[in-house]
Amino acid sequence: MAKGDSLSNFELMAMLVLIRLEDEAYGVPISQEIAKQTGRDVPVGSVYATLERLEEKGLVKSEVGEPTPERGGRAKRYFAVTGKGLRVIRETQRTLIRLWKGLPQLEGRNV
Amino acid sequence: MRSAQPPIMATWLLTQFGCSPNNDAVIGDLAEQYHQGQTSIWYWKQTLIAIIRSVFREIGSHKWLVFRAVVVGWIMIGLFDIARNVQVVGHPIVYRSHPELQFIVAILQIIIMVASGWLVARISKAHHSAAVLLFAGSFLFYSLISHLAKMSMVYALSDPGHRSPLFLNFLIVSPLEAGLLALLILKGGGLLSTAPTRHRSDI
Image (cartoon, rainbow over all chains, first blue to last red; front, top):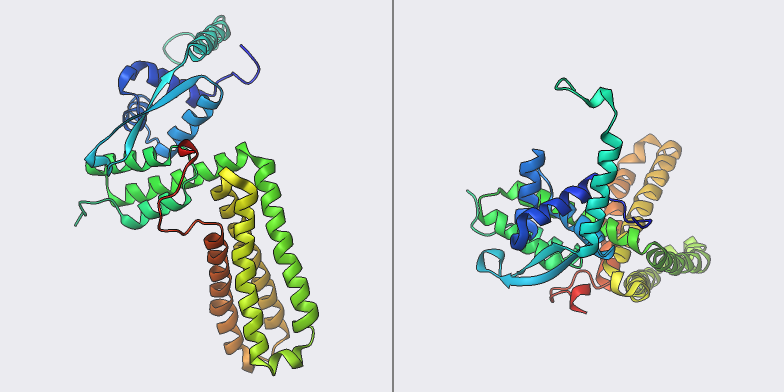
């Protein structure tokens, strides 16, 4: 993994949600899915700030979608994880699993 | 009763001050969630967070460009302040006895504020919203702090019988003046237009 490609907790969550939502990954379902999985309200502005940062790193790409009347005629922006993004997620997963192994404090149900 | 449309003022603020290249999509997402049943308070909260996050992200991503633009704006205001203090306010008796002189200085100050906002916007180019907001915010902060310092000093030195008019000036007039000057900076920087704003994604 190249320097600068390491992911924060929220960045990793956002990318996993993009994969989970597939073709429906725009601001509203992304923030709702993160809220559902984490149990806390996630501001749309924070979601976009994170996705824009990931897009600058080349881990996420986006395209403009269709405008709808309930959005005041404003277009949606759909996000998707790039090939580089998927490689970084896999590498992060491997690193976390390596770190997880052999820690007796984190084993069992009473943690 | 809950309005059918999202709060107009909040949407206007986000349109004017939101610095995200995806600002239109953010506004659309908030409108969609409002129509799904979210409250006006929720909408306002989301709007303010979206503005603050986008401004800080923009400043963080282009620190030097924004910093350079704000410094140039401050130099312009500083030079005007020095010239005014030396030429006009430095001769208080002449200044006070000539209302037309006070009027000219006030007009010059308005021009300088608008011009400094314009200059900051020109230097910071595509990131002008964040730079102009930071510049106007720093000006407002500095003005209020300096008024507070002056107020404390005058209070300590003044005769107790003459404090009321002084307080009226320091508590109401001076902050209002600072706020108006900050608005002029925003106007000069192109942030208070009614026309649709262009975003990076449109360029």
